[in-house]
Image 1 (cartoon, helix red, strand yellow):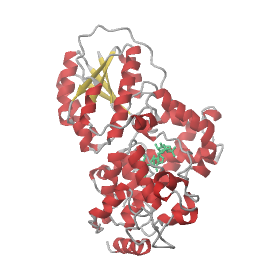
Image 2 (cartoon, rainbow, N blue to C red):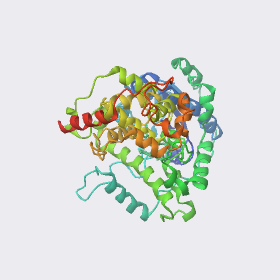
Image 3 (tube, rainbow, N blue to C red):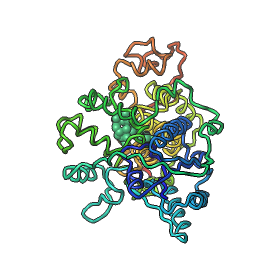
Image 4 (cartoon, helix red, strand yellow):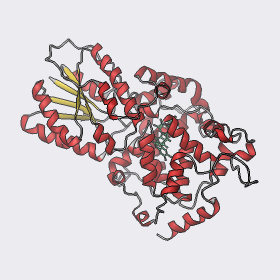
Length: 473
Ligand SMILES: Cc1cc2nc3c(=O)[nH]c(=O)nc-3n(C[C@H](O)[C@H](O)[C@H](O)COP(=O)(O)OP(=O)(O)OC[C@H]3O[C@@H](n4cnc5c(N)ncnc54)[C@H](O)[C@@H]3O)c2cc1C
């Protein structure tokens, strides 16, 4: 008997491990729930809820394929190898199939699983599924990993022009198996572990299922990708795909995205317009950060990529941090973004950059505190992309923004939310102000009577302070 172990890949279409297991023989499926371990990784309640809702869907989908799903609760990953061994003995399993997870702890866990299985002649077979190209396979002429996105992207383009990664064929229904009781854990009990359950409105904001994710993808490719290059930076527009939670929790695959992007070109790598190219580049940023996480695992251990930036003297400023977290900094675009995050579990990319730059440069607060806050609240929280985004904004990362190129949040706001529609939505106490005043309400009249804080910092002075802090390392 074979076992398919689902992790961050709760889908049945285009799934590397699922395809291979069904070729190898009859199988059952496993999902391990580890809320205590997830809490150590700062996974947000909205993300866990999203995962558990999809798990219910997966269970039904697997049932239709005659694949029984065992759900086991193992609080910490250190206990997973033992739990897996027991399961292989209970169901007489000789091979486990799973897709590779790239985090350091995840890779260590899998090594331990293999070790415990070895004496019993049982195997753990791992497959590349999360990225377009296997991690470790994209190398420069000196066989070293790329550290700069431009060169990495060029290499990816060359590979894509040879052939686009293909999706796996549809899984066929297997013959029904006679199994003992699975004595698995009901999914709903885990609600007890998350006292701040997302509201039904928030759950409706993020429906689960592969079908839904594929519809989102189709709608984006049919209606939005053509204008993506021009519109993606405006947070008041609904012009990006919003697929990040689905890609991150594996409700859709990266191959499905690439195939959809080149559908009109009959699956050939031919770039027809700038929107298509720009979206491809965003998918490759995702790819880049996954490869960085694998090749430079120190980034997931709270280390900056650029070693010299360890010497930056970050400020210990809990009140400023709290103001930023709660969207009370007095800088409207920053507060709008932080409130969007708290309300929806998602934030527009441009505003992620603005809020992260504001925290790390204007407030000179350690990027790791921002990275953690984002993980604790994002529905799409992904170690590789989140770390990459934070280190880019903090100028500590691989290919990050130079430390002296500091975004001015007010100019960013005037440029990307000129009419203030985004700010009005998330900072309703400013909604009555005209578009000129809105971005910087107290600039022309510091006595304006508003139920809204004054800026907690002076943007010009703090810009100079940040540049000095980086110069001094
Ligand atoms: C400080 C900071 C933190 C971030 N944290 C995360 C995170 O935890 N999880 C996450 O998925 N993305 C993260 N991003 C990247 C980006 O903001 C989101 O992927 C994007 O906003 C998701 O919206 P979308 O699906 O509509 O993206 P689209 O614009 O439609 O892009 C398509 C897909 O490409 C990928 N992508 C796009 N931009 C990036 C990028 N800059 N880096 C990596 N992948 C990208 C995502 O998978 C996204 O779904 C972060 C960016 C910053 C600046």
